[in-house]
Image (tube, rainbow over all chains, first blue to last red):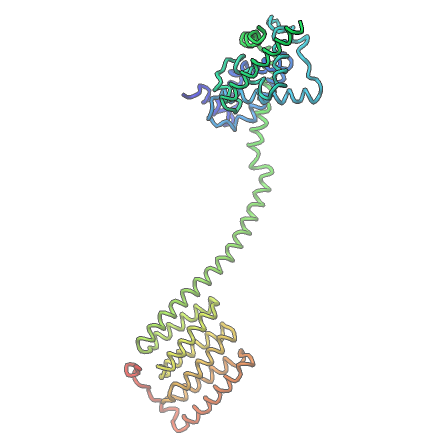
Length: 179
Length: 242
């Protein structure tokens, strides 16, 4: 089935600025949402989203319509988020969401701070855990869709989900034992 | 349950809507990048690529020159092969049919093509074959003159090896062909051949010229009883079949 954005994408690839602008309007919310779920912070999400938009310009010509545009966009934003995180770690500014996060007015920031902390801990358990959790749990994608986006097999996604649960259960048991 | 809670929170956390100002800023940055990228692409052919184009054209010209040189070689080779093939074909004809002037002249022309092509060994082979044919069949002045044509071509276009071969061919012709009427003409022809060949012959081959000279002298002696005006016509070609 043809992506409804196909025409826009083709025109944007051909250098039509208006089409690119329209494409960006349609997808900015998705870009920002993934970015925010990655970092849980509006300021950082804004930076990740902006970098993603710029990367979208540079990469759009490489999009060959072999996968759905949404899938391709997920890959792009996740790559940008990874790059951003690496840069943050390099500069030792890997700050957890602070004032800005609580100021978003969504009422979920504090909860999500905990989630992001868990996500970062999961990332230390195994590479790819964080994006797997975001795609499968936060975005509600199937294992197959997540596998396509992350460029791994479906069984790898299933294994990651299983390992994630196992780790969280163990962490919970440890916490109970401590208490 | 913490694990369930983690999944539940992930699933049910709603990301805040982006600020319009933030979105506009991101969009304008992306559009600026878009513009920069496409302007760069538009300028590419008239920008630095222009010098690249010149370089490319120069390279193409160089390539063409190289190819031209290659084409010359191919042309020469093709000419040589063609000429050689014609010579071989004609010589085969000569071996079967009696020697005829037109064929010999055609053979000369083919030989010229071969010589011009520079395939000396092939020519030498042809000339050897022609010499053998001459030994057997060449008796008339006309045929001898045809051989002279070949010799002149060889002298003008080829090296000592060919000249030597031609000289030997001429000697063989003189030995094999009887000094029939019109010897003066034949002698004059041989003298011209000798003159043409001598400056180009290496010292090692000088004996051939000396031998030729002896033969010329004997031919002149034989021709003395004849009057120059009494030029007898050689036997009709049809009767010369071996």
